[in-house]
Image 1: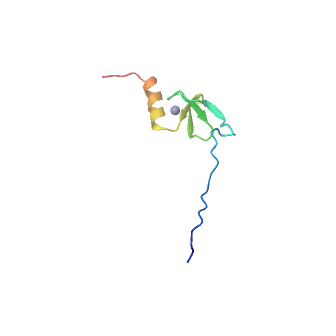
Image 2: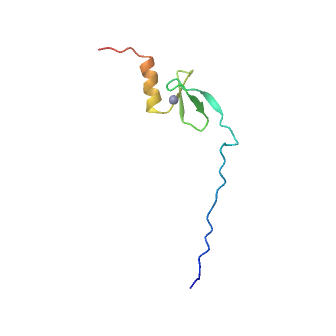
Image 3: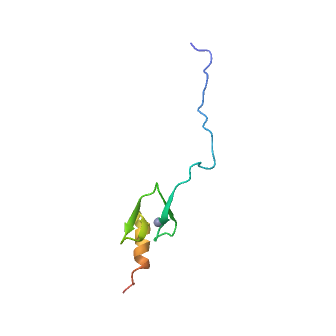
Length: 69
Ligand SMILES: [Zn+2]
């Protein structure tokens, strides 16, 4: 029997800032925020960048659509 257990917790160093900055690909036409390289993004009609996110796509469609009824 072990008289005591030695605990060896994994202490991860907490860094506030990521040393490698993400590359900004462009601005999302839906939410208006930057699209960075690790995010899923769509290019629409050659010059429109959007996050591959239903919220952003819907927002873009609303901005470029006319409400009827
Ligand atoms: Zn977006």
